Image (cartoon, rainbow, N blue to C red):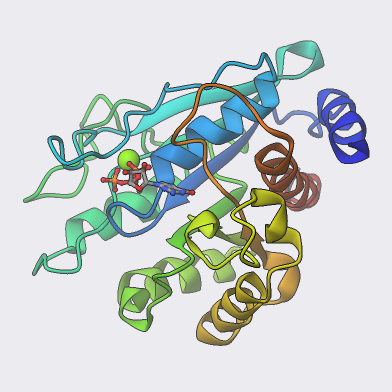
Length: 261
Ligand SMILES: Nc1nc2c(ncn2[C@@H]2O[C@H](COP(=O)(O)OP(=O)(O)OP(=O)(O)O)[C@@H](O)[C@H]2O)c(=O)[nH]1
Ligand SMILES: [Mg+2]
């Protein structure tokens, strides 16, 4: 298919404006929304070796949110050793009473104050004397596009309090936002059971519209994907969805960077 042949070389030729040496993304969402699976999927399609990545630990019945650290994954290296990086962390928990510390830590991460491998604490925000605290983040340390991650069949208002706070923070700073809808394969795909039905499925459009209304976003901000969570090899439908999402994310992140430097 054309999309893949066109997009991969386009991404490889990208060059974030100097002095910025990295494009940084972060995944944010409720526990089990598919954040780590998305990181694996993005790495899989950008690497394009045919093998599925399992670099980010995903949630299963035996291990709930094992990853309590800020996990940095390099998705791609551009010319001049510039990087495309994504940060994964545990999701928020709707049942948890006090999420203030987690929320503050996420905001600090977006602003570049928190270094990779920091361990999120239940009872405190990051302390400024912590070895993981970065006092003066540069443009290369900050997040350039925030990815809200949500399962397509679980688009819910009540996610809103935490997401609202993040959203108003990033809106103030004009940091781009994209909403990635995962598990689109769980929707009704025109009966065929074939993933390519996604491109025609009315159910997918209904979920995109619901997300638009719930969060007051534009069409272009909502990116449906099917994560690589089973099977052994890449396929064109999942690749194209993920690559199309990356295209939108990178365009926006690069525009943001060029305005900031
Ligand atoms: N069918 C399907 N399953 C998915 C998809 N994305 C994620 N899953 C499944 O959803 C579950 C949770 O996925 P994770 O990627 O671990 O979710 P997470 O957001 O990283 O969860 P935490 O790190 O605990 O917050 C796993 O069982 C995945 O296999 C998808 O696109 N399709
Ligand atoms: Mg995870």
